[in-house]
Image (cartoon, rainbow, N blue to C red; front, top):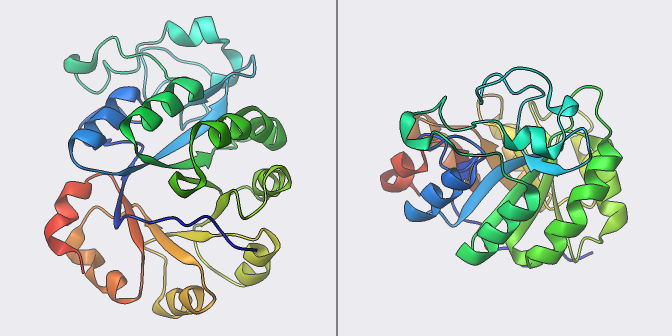
Length: 249
């Protein structure tokens, strides 16, 4: 099946421009856009009431002024969290973004989105997909959307809801080991997203020879990453994409 005609950028801002603004917030996406980034990578998961929100951790302690599990919050409770003050006083009062709010902003800015389906322990992968994927497909054209995950159940459900011609799926790997080809072929994947520290030249070569786009997370040292560009990596998902501008192939 053909995939969406995506024009991948060399650089994506990881969780928005997370070196300059609190990660996974509307502010981080605006900062990425202001810095010239055309795509962002963000995480989506569900609150306890089923609302999809842009958030990475299972808990809220690291990136808010509260403690507890995201799964124990409904939207009014989540809205009371300050998710910016932990980063700096300049962002104090930033609120958690719903998926709908984030999609509206990204569309208004004309950006592309790599949306990671974040299935933390004990959470329902299919419920996450069913709550978030239709909104993403409606808000963004196929050439500006990649949906990715480590979780095969989430990816399989996403593929059941949308064909490869409509939805580019990215398969996340820590290490690209045995069985990756069967896994990706079964999902009709568009891209492979690999931990740059664990990617080998041999694996990169095989990925490219099999026709997949190759993205790496999360390199922040452009000099250390130079050889991976030479292996055929298409895009780097970085906290500091601005550092890479003068080091691109």
